[in-house]
Length: 246
Image (cartoon, rainbow, N blue to C red; front, side):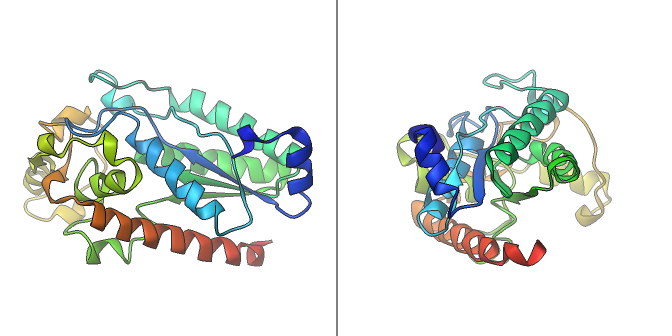
């Protein structure tokens, strides 16, 4: 972890390492059973496990993200997309100035995706550094359906399982619930064709009565470790191929 290193240790490491991994997430509600830091705690664990197998340095995490859709809910501490973009762009400039050629964000929050897309291209144009956004649930798209019943959404089987693999002491499975409000609403809006659903910008409580989307009761640490293994393996494999883009 970079924050535990001296300046000279960082300088020495940069002689062999050109990649910095940045965990990024949000502080927002994740139903009654998960901590508000879930979206950041998962990427932190993923980054640490990746660093054990790949030549990368892990930067201090970015805890705050764009959670405007949940802004009025309890336990949500959000920044605006403009603020987040300014912070991430400044960080990327700094990483590049220090000598990193590749900046890899391991993202745990869907609301950050568009902001990361913007600063990724702007950083490339300004500094020449290669910026990568890895959404942990997407890097294992092929594997997760073989482990869980549905794709990862929010505080559901998949995300809860990952938290059980990362920080089980922070998960209260006695409060885990099932909430299919979003599924029923989407089917209603699309006349039974959920894959045709457009993006609608409404407050999060429209999609959930409990704060989660899916069935968290089916989560387990075993499932979480399987997902974690897939995520880390795929990230390590991907990082090994990145030089082909430069």
